[in-house]
Length: 242
Image (cartoon, rainbow, N blue to C red):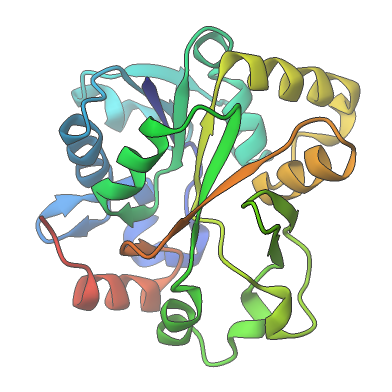
C-alpha cells in the first residue's frame, strides 16, 4: 500500500495561516498537518508516500517524498490534483488523503484490511463534530446515504433534513489499480468537466452511473478538518494525539 496526500490548494478561507504557506503547514501541537499525517502513515506501515503540490510547491522540497505537481491549482480542484498521481494509482493500491485533516491511525489500519476496489471511511460522529464547527450545520453539510451492507448510495448533494446524512466523507479514499482504471476511463469521457469537480461529486457520479460500487467503512475514530479559523480552534482544543 502507498499513500498520496493532496496538498495543491492554498486554503483561502484561512488566510491567516496560508498567505505565505499552504494549508498543510498549519501547526497543531507544534507539528504541521502534513507531519501529523506522515507520522500516522509511517506508524501504519506505509512508507511509500507521495504528495500532490501546487501553491508554494517549493516549500515541500524539505520532505523526502515523491512529488507530483498541479501547476493549475488556482483553477482546478481535488479531482484534477488526484489525476496528477495517476502513475501511482494505476500501478499500486493507494490511500489518498486531503492535506488539511487530522485523523486517527485506526482509520488507516481499517483500510489496510479491506479488499474492496474503492473504499472510503465515513464519520459516524459527524453531528457532534459539525456542531462544534458551525452554528447551522445543515447549511454546510452534504448528503451521505449508505446501504445496509455499507455501500455508499448517495454523497455530495444538498441535504434537506438530517435524515439525509448517515455519515460524513472524511477526505480519505482507498483505490486499487482496478478501480482507478474505471475511474480514469470515466474522467476521460467527461474531460471538459473534470477540472473543477469536487471529490464527492465524482464519487456520486461513479455510483449513479454504475461505473463502480463504493464501499464505506464506518468510523467513530477522531477526525478533524481544518477549513477555517474556527476549525483550527476546535482541532487544537479537542484533538488527542498518540
